[in-house]
Length: 157
Image (tube, rainbow, N blue to C red):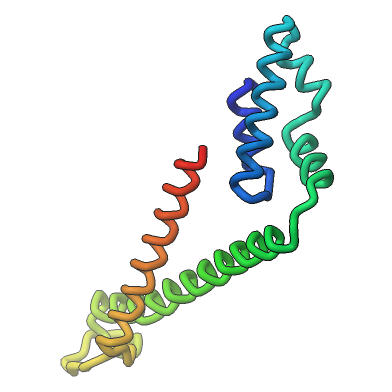
């Protein structure tokens, strides 16, 4: 493991507010620079300060968050979890309507009959246009939110 991978892994494992995380990472980089300038090999430095998981765990145990920081971190995680659950539900709902329609149209049969029929069905799965539009908008919102999170994380690096 090289220095860049070590720092990325520590950053990934620190579950702290962004300001605190960047301060800790800056301090870690300075420590690594000092060790490098004194001639210590990176592998030796890692042995001394610990693997990324151990280092991050030790920091997390030693840092005391204020009640407000704990609440914000907890709320952000809960919001993200809820948003992901609703997004998965929207995708599943959309697929549950779309898959039977696609399957029936491709087979040309109604109700999984053995032969094609001449009967025209207005809505095989009972889906209406409003539900499809709502599901599509929800999926688009979920995609936009996820892209925004990814961009925010890249900017934080």
